[in-house]
Amino acid sequence: MTRFDLTGRLAVVTGARRGIGRAMARALAEAGADVIGVSAHLEPEGSDVEHDVVAAGRTFEALRTDFADPDAVRALGADLAARERPVDILVNNAGTIRRAPAAEHGDADWDHVLQVNLTAQFSLARALGAEMVRRRYGKIIFTASLLSFQGGVTVPGYTAAKSGVAGLTKALANEWAPYGVNVNALAPGYIATDNTRALQDDPARSKAILDRIPAGRWGSADDIGGATVFLASDAAAYVHGAVLPVDGGWLGR
Image (tube, rainbow, N blue to C red):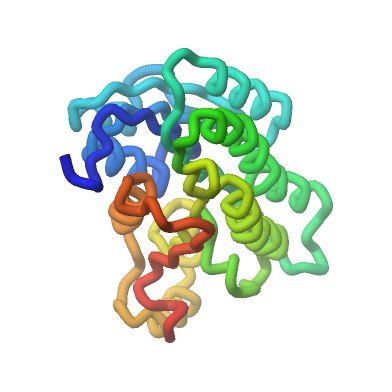
């Protein structure tokens, strides 16, 4: 067994139905973890992410939760925390985005984005983190963003939420590191997913983005997998409160 081996671990991946979440779940399974996938519209059986996990020889369970519903998120946390088999790894990846100029960014959009991207993340981390602290073992990985470091354009709610995720990562790490619980975050760069479709389809914006990325390409969801396995593994035992960019060099430019 290597320090990157996750055999016998149980991972919960939110936002697992597609994109980055699906790639994270697949990478964790390929490293040996069994996976519980959670998403608002995840199929009970036969999803693409289930096929990925089972193909890697691991078990998969699908749970459907609307992260815009605080009661549903609290119920999910209570369910997972009370199970006989404890959760070893929580990947808090579920997210959404609403685009509008700040002067036109309505309260409903603001509240929705903050609930899904920040408040729900804290609620679930609180429920499972308490059990991890009790067991003195656990890995929590948030999905932050380049906009945890920068302001972005026409996404004030998303920027506020992802900046909050970076701060929350550090706050929880400060409290839980003494109990053997690693809390860190990944900050994906410009990844070709549904969330960035509007940018990919805008020739001027896409060119401006590519011109800024030293690697010279949009990232793929699979580019996030290796970093996820690292933070979920014993190889990252002394990594606490980090926000790790996976961005093709964007922030170093």
